[in-house]
Amino acid sequence: MTELKAIKISDSVYWVGAIDWNVRNFHGYNTSRGTTYNAFLIIDEKITLIDVVKKGFFDEMKQRIASVIEPEKIDYFISNHSEPDHTGTLQQAIKEFKPEKVFASKMGVKAINAHYDLGFDITKVDDGERLNIGKKNISFMETRMLHWPDSMFSYLEEEKVLFSQDAFGMHLASSERFGGELSWDILKRQAESYYANIITLYSPHVLRLLKKIEESGMQIDVIAPDHGPVWKGDDKFKRLLTLYQKWSSRDVDNKVVIIYDTMWKATETMARYIEDGVRSAGVKVEVMCLSNTARSDVADEMLNAAGIIVGSSTLNNNMLPSVADNLTYIKGLKFNTPYAAAFGSFGWSGEAVKQISKILEETESELIGTVSVQYTPKDETKQLCFELGTKMAEKIKSKEEKQ
Ligand code: FEO
Image (cartoon, rainbow, N blue to C red):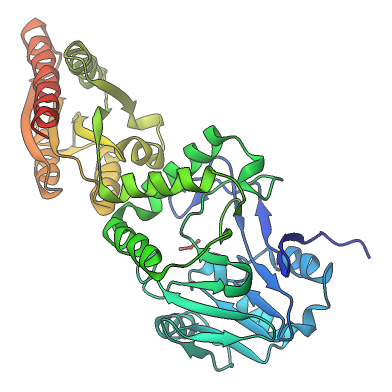
């Protein structure tokens, strides 16, 4: 039988995951380049499988394992993270491969049992605990809230391989398995988007984790995340770590994001004058119309923005649904955006700008101003929009000067 092949990533570790070239919606995140669900096989006296793949990809993982050993020879499973993209085939894998033991963190045991009726007792491992698998040892490090409460890292000590589940990953389907084989532009773009959409909310945990790794003195030769390429033997991972430091520290650039939706182009016209005001005052600005922009693309731009300006027409006494959708998403991710403003056109009631302002204030941004207009913006409103843009830019520049 011809199988899909495993790929060796260190002396005794193989990548045995699956490539999802076609996924475009990952719980609301627009995965324009697909993703991978990585699983790793460690060959030792106790053959060990780290994580499994999403439902629908079991056969691909099984074939890759079978290209190295008979899957029934696997002794141990380790589940680093319970989200279904990494446990969706756990039940099937237990049934078919019949492992002796399955290990997970304390919270992982609870989460997996809440997801599935496995009919199999999972063994809890604690933070810092070690597991001997023959000639080698695996140690565990809890990484709560990166990405879920159950998350943990596994570290193959003798080969210095860190299995980091969601951390340091990205949604990128590619035939290349190593970061060193891909251009930095692609890696940076996808890592940034992944951080913005998956990890931003947990930035304080990232900061603590980076410190914990540094303090542990852990030597790392290979980073094996559950999505995207494996990091090995090049300086790109160091560059990624530098970015993780920046993103988790919530540093922002001199940049404004304007998002809006519009019924008859009045709100869109306002957006253009606000944009011109920001640009004229020397601050970078991105403009995104929400009727044709994915919310995850907005999140990408928000990651390092110092200001957000949100516009909407009023429809049926409310902001437009696309604006409400994006504000909910942005608010949930808890970006650090020091300044905010709102604008919009209305016919008679004009609730949208007030509703947007309220949500922006709840995000803890300072609301620096609003502009509303009935029906179509004329010269006076255009001037107010331009001034709102310059005011935002001046606020951002003066904050930077103070730092
Ligand atoms: Fe890739 Fe949090 O799952």
